Length: 387
Image (cartoon, rainbow, N blue to C red; front, side, top):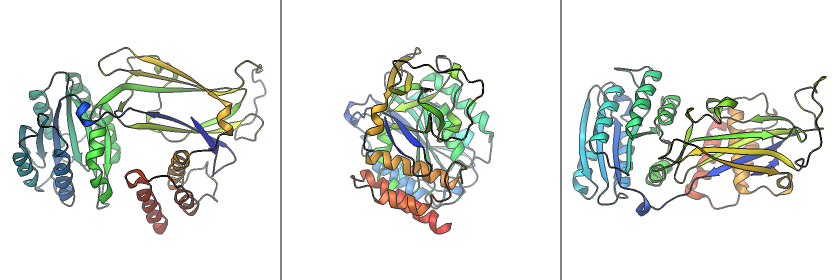
């Protein structure tokens, strides 16, 4: 937990972060992967990036790990049958044979990919279909809810479904569908939009292979004696009803090895001016022995092999208000601010601009892991130029 003053309002920001542990490649269970590659016309400019990414990643696999490649466009093709990673020449030949063609029948590709994954299924291993696409489905079943239901039903067989979105040329891209399919497939969503992303592809995919917790839910209760108003920034498509938190039948997000989840709340404290007037008939608050707490955070999660959730509870002490925000906190706030300026949020001051966000990101002096901060700077500069 961390806090800092909001750069776009008079309020305080609270960051809640979850970090999944990151096992080394040699610590992972046996791997059975099916890469489902979109080779339709809309992906013609992306295929060189896909080939390079797959070549690099195939070198990371252990000799007994297994890989298949299914392609789809106007028709579906098995480009590489289930093959041990030790057969490198065979794998490279299949990767280099990938060529663009025709329309996009994603439904038939998904069906064949699952058939391959289930045929090569490894007990107590990692079994996963990984879609590489721009999310454009224009032939066969193109209805998003129907595709999601198909993936949701298939996951019962123990095969997860992840997505990798490619959009290095800035053309049309269906981010919403790619995210939803990975969500219902108990998988992970990765976006590749630059040369840096291609360079980091192997690391990203390796970190997303193992699901360490499923149906992860976070519930935050704010102390009404301390917090007058609060606002969760983002996650509009992830909000659950209060009663869903303790209901283990309700599906939620999954946490992959090495991945992290960050939530940022904007808080108005009691006594400060907020957006909502005080209630005339508001219930009287009483002083309690918990008034040194700002909030109480509860996390529910299931181990991958279990169907009953575990509960973790964390009080958030007022002591964090006096702590100096870390560079990680500053970066997270800059990203959240950038997203709000892009959306022209009504909650952000008109004085808060791309220039101020750039200054904030450039002022962060910590090591730039995998060049992600440099990439963010380039994105902000590009958007600023367009604006």
